[in-house]
Length: 546
Ligand code: GLN
Image (cartoon, rainbow, N blue to C red; front, side, top):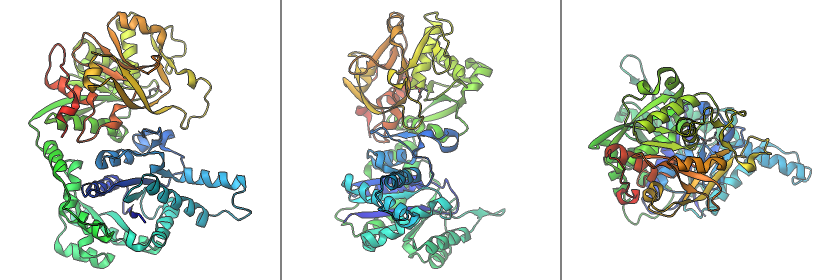
């Protein structure tokens, strides 16, 4: 029988439950255990793919092409595992499966109800996640906050699982907040007490409380929380804000949480946890000797979570270079209003991340023109490749009004057009080109040097592609199509020959970056920023991994 950790959240949303879950996973990995993280999302969307990045933040894409909640990105980066479609269970997926079974007659005339049918479906998916990934420990995070109506079937399911798997094999961790109120920021435990009462009403007694707080908790405060919430004293964990999120597993480890979890679940404690690699990551992240400034030019800048993996990938590249990467978040519509010269005056490099639609697209094109003509290192991600091709077509090839069919159906020069297999698709959900595909790298190119390899396997999420009719013209003018699909039909990477570092990918490299293994394209960007030269000598990122 496997082991199970259930993580819930109380008081407010956005208190870092995902990072707490990811950090617990890291502590177990550092003890040599395998983990299968799973995120249970109570919303009715079947997946996060149809959700607005303003509301929901980034859509994280797994190797197997699922469009998932951004917490899976934290899991992958912290636990160094690859999540799969089944790592994200939404209420929408659960209900859809149950309704499909009902239509097939699988319930043999029974009345189909939330309990037991929906809860059974949730439980099966949690148990399946552990079995499929052959994990020592399944860590299941329930999205939302205790007390939310839509979360109830999920909480009921994890309550029932205690009986199913045995209470010695599972534990409940509640992430809560201790707010500071009044002029002296007096810490208050009452919201936590209420949140735990709510949880106990449902039948779940937490083993651990992770208490997010701006100030350290006094001994009395911990005693009080322990007593009123009926949680053992050692299970009251103080979780202060950290300088960098990569320090959080270390902070938890110091507070004894790792050992507490291992003991509670009866996991063998053969050797002390090996935290060395993570100490080195945190050390490099906290006190780097160099710094640089890189602009992220996008249209969802008001919600930075929309670019979470891009942000983290830049930080990882910085860690490898002993460099603090300051991020300048630039709304692409501002570039349209102010001009690129002003908007990008202080930056050393430019990233145009993924995007959709026409709003702000012209600003991205201006930013790319600026990077190209001023020899500023540039990395384009998906839409950032498509916009770079449009910019080059317009300003170098002289194809005025060149565009992507996504934004101008009538353009005389559709340099970016719909993928052929997308032509007859009407549904919006899960219909893009998704997940991992191989990409052949042209020997000697910047891309091949950066990867130090001949093939790259990268994750995709797009409907449009470079129009092959324009390939010869682009290449003749100095744009190298340095990465293509194995059959050669699809452009996956472009780069500029006469530029120190100008590279863009049709895929999303940011999803595969890890704090101890920066992604080569991000690593190369920071390197080009730190060592400006006519032609960046990009060495393989592996060489500088922690
Ligand atoms: N909108 C573009 C497409 O669908 C780019 C998508 C993206 O950046 N992820 O192809």
